[in-house]
Amino acid sequence: MEVSPLKKLEQLEFSLDSVTDLSSPSVSSSSPAVATFSCVDGVTELRFLQSDSTHCFTFDLASAQLFKLGPVQFICVSDNSDSSEEKSFSRGVNIKFKNEKDSKDFCDSFEEWRKDAVVQGLSLQNGTASANKSKFDEKIEASSAKMYFHYYGQLLHQQNMLQDYVRTGTYYAAVMENRSDFAGRVVVDVGAGSGILSMFAAQAGAKHVYAVEASEMAEYARKLIAGNPLFAERITVIKGKVEDIELPEKADVLISEPMGTLLVNERMLESYVIARDRFMSPNGKMFPTVGRIHMAPFSDEFLFIEMANKAFFWQQQNYYGVDLRPLYGSAHQGYFSQPVVDAFDPRLLVAPPMFHTIDFTKMKEEDFYEIDIPLKFTASMCTRMHGLACWFDVLFDGSTVQRWFTTAPGAPTTHWYQIRCVLSQPIYVMAGQEITGRLHLIAHSAQSYTIDLTLSAKMWGPGANQGGILQSSTCKFDLKEPYYRMSQPSYPVAQEPPLQPQQQLNSQDTQIQNDELEEELLQQLPQNPSAQL
Image 1 (spheres, rainbow, N blue to C red):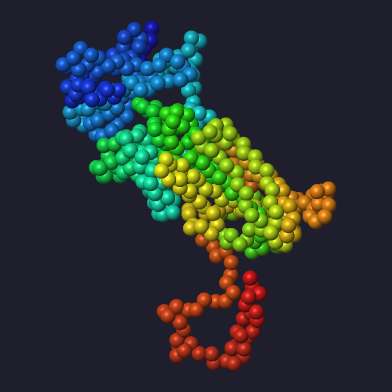
Image 2: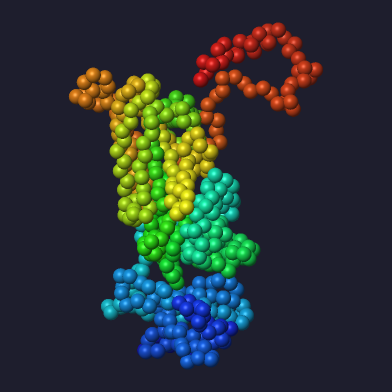
């Protein structure tokens, strides 16, 4: 008969410097104690027995979790509820070891005992085992998640976000202007990254901050926080996904930076509302609180020509003896399926914008799976409409100050820029003409969205209400594969800027010796520079 793996583990004891009950830390004893792993009637348990008391803290290892606060200090919590629908993790202890060797040996034993306890707990009556797959893993493909967490686990990408001073400065202002929302409160930082928002919350007087980060950046965050002793004792970094981890107490405030391109890209907003449902107290605050997607039709002939010209490579009939034209249609469609990410002049908009509101305090996770936005605009000029421009803003609804953060064109540029969906078939519109359409976003497993855009120009003038659609254009875009155009010049200027002193030509070094050459150069200059606009 095969021996259960739990029986192969001998009972272990570890000496502790102190044990403190989290539910009543002010009255709990901090005297030396002993931690014991044991298996009683097939149930694996972890017990903490204080040397000067008969009181014993007992945890079922199948549901216990261990969080590291420092080299020798940990928090141990366990599911203490009988309901399978709603779990309570309010029971926990703060444990402290005498040295790092004891703490490491305890952690190794904890993982080994807990692993075997979970394996036994998963065994079903018919001999099978439950997959126990997390909610995040069920909806996101593994390859996308791996690339996502690898990207945000690198310091250079965190630096890029930290150096977005519009973003970072607005978060700092929103927290500091609303200190009353943070002072003495428990805060959860969802997707903490480098831990900068956790330290903002600690600066504002938070009682304790749980910084949850699933990527390897969690280790950097621990190091950064440890290097700031004023905050270190009040911030706990937890490596894991909010869908999987457990916390020892409810949060009064959730803070996060879950916004992606077009607000919803990367699908982190879903994790944000999951954290709300799992960890936030009923009257808790969310920073940010509300998001808005803004949309307006635009006209940009230069961008349209740039997109169309990319596919002309495939118009070659003799490319090293090969006719590339059979792929021209597919290439043209491919380029126009890429949303364009750049900063543009707001004067390119051909109608006043509209917006779609997403309330993070009320939105359900499933509501993000499909977002349907009816479009309706009134053209303010006669022009050729090339597509739909989009940007977003979010509201930090603090008790003291309500602060907006925007990525709008014309506002200070952020690392989100703006996004434009370019139609392969532009539409001519007249001033006063009604533009209708639909922006339909469908989430997919690569942590992004497929976008279906339709824009139509209706009849205008007398009898327009009885008229139908004159022109209509439809395009499909993949938000996961945008065209990053930020570093490219958007528009030529009317005249060349003056040379800088170090760039000015020296007449002794450069002389035009041929009158014909000089005449040829002059002929190449535009006769009317303003006509280039």
